Length: 255
Image (cartoon, rainbow, N blue to C red):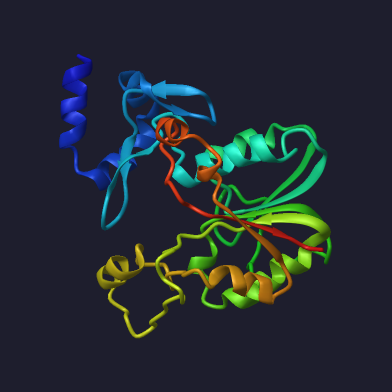
């Protein structure tokens, strides 16, 4: 039965498979039980992870249990191993909260946890990232991951993130990034959604960030540590947790 399920799974068109995974998550997770890969967020292990991607689908990316991607699992491991996030009382602001984190962070009693987004039903506060309704120096920790690539005026958004972060606070601002590209690429003349998806990765992305992303964060005031946490982990751990080797975590501080 398990072999037949895997055969059928490989025949389902990937975009449909991604949508179905949200509905059929418990069933898919059951049939994919194994020991090859582990989701560190819930410590469940599987024979394979699901494929994921828009234009160029990647294998073994989407966790069958938490629906986490490489970036979510990398962030979880970093927070767990390198910070006191899971023990220190903190006031946290989380933009566009990810399903893999939302309920888990909400349950942490030591956090004063607020979610925000312009449209998300998970948002406690509906807000424009370029015009936030929060007072300056309000939050100890900010998560804003895979948001800025959607924002036309990302400089204004970065300035607002810096404004509401407390001195001594930490902001983790992940983005999809081409580390082989020195300069961020934008082209508003490309309007066809399919062409934009092909060039930018998604139709609603407005840029491809290059390595200059870190300096742009510094220009608004952040101290930025460019952390390649996969270099700290063993190659076996990178494979086990289905991480993207070489992905950089932008760990930003307000001094």
